Length: 102
Image 1 (cartoon, rainbow, N blue to C red):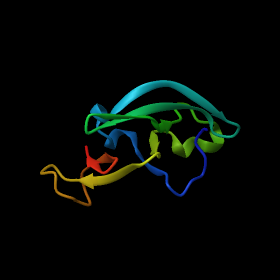
Image 2 (image 1 turned 45 degrees about the vertical axis):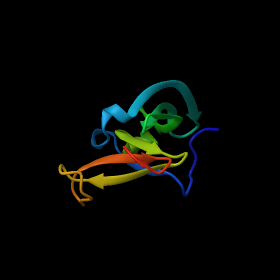
Image 3 (image 1 turned 120 degrees about the vertical axis):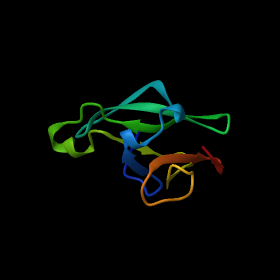
Image 4 (image 1 turned 60 degrees about the vertical axis):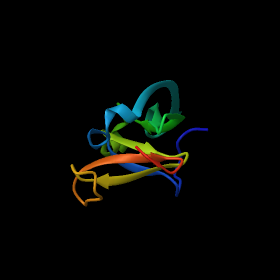
């Protein structure tokens, strides 16, 4: 199953997501209009959620606005936190996996 338009998908700028929670996957899929999607597995609370995030490193010209974004699904919740780890409208994004805060 590849990325599709889903109501349980959250999208963020890649630069706003902490690197320690993403592990490159060897999985890739092809969307006829967006291009080749590459995947990350998400690490949280000592658990690995395989292929729970994806991105398009070189989207087609029609989908150019998604470049630099990463999408999450499969139970990953994303929230914004401030430097003091409190919920904040400004700050880096981090995810939750299986109800555990990253």
